[in-house]
Image (cartoon, rainbow, N blue to C red; front, top):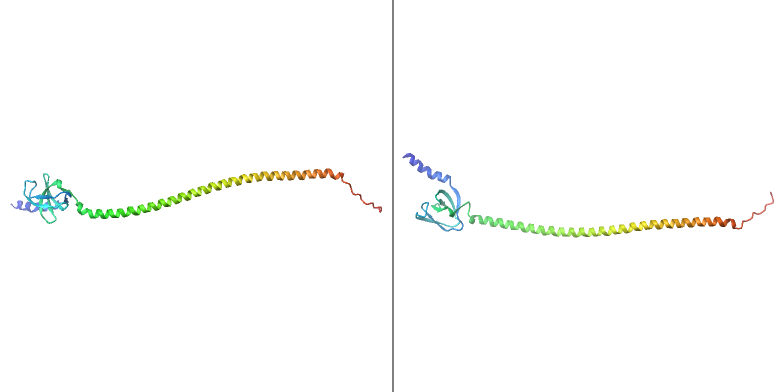
Length: 188
């Protein structure tokens, strides 16, 4: 008899120790039965999304305890593990609002970066065009320098040839120029 009493006292305690948190499915409005089938009498109702504690499982039924302390049995298809969507919804909404703010901030940053990238691209294109112009100008100046070198060489050769020709002509004409006679000096 003592063993039976001891088991009777320890039974609910062990059931409470193995209790797990759950909730009534979010899309259900159900009645609880007093036993693990629909053959037992209805002893209350459970609102959709209400938090419950699972006490026991038999057949396809789960024994639950509601927040108000009522105990009853429900088909296990109507009980989902973890917190209900009604409890999670405010957190999800705040997370969504934070995510939306973050997305908006990132969108604005992306737009700013795209504008900056476009500006850099335009600057790069302008710089490339300027580099191309300067390369053409350098090429033109190099050809002008090369032409100047040739024209300077031709000019120096021409001047040198003219000076040489003048020297040759002068050398040929000098002997035919009348010579100046020395005054006679009889004193010697």
